[in-house]
Image 1 (spheres, helix red, strand yellow):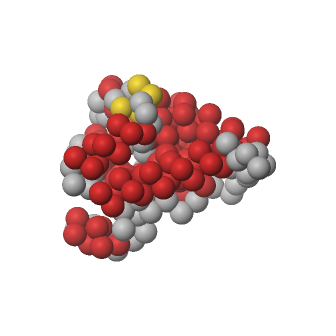
Image 2 (image 1 turned 60 degrees about the vertical axis):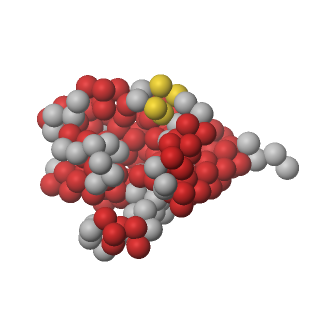
Length: 176
């Protein structure tokens, strides 16, 4: 890959420099563990995956939570990543990880800049998928996230999360 990605240590340092709470860092580490397990399982199935991007993207996906704990942490995090000079691939993982993706009309309602907020690459999908399997810093069934989204009247987001979950699990368990 031509982009210079930070190391795991540099990514963790960036979270700390931005005053990310320790529980957010623990969450990011837990997401990273699942993301890397997922990337490795897909690699075993013949997929070409940039594991370094998956690791760094997963570690930094919630860097915006250093400033806000709302859905806006995706856009705020992307701005922090850009300011830190991180490659576009990392910025994209950060801005596309929430809710299984945010549609253009949802982004417009949120007042976000016009952009793509839906995971576009397998690496972005892996990080978004792994994030939905972690509650705080513990692995949790996907149903927990889906039920929470449904309770919050975010039915479309719940459907996107389910679709992404099914896509990744089907790729991993790809039985003929």
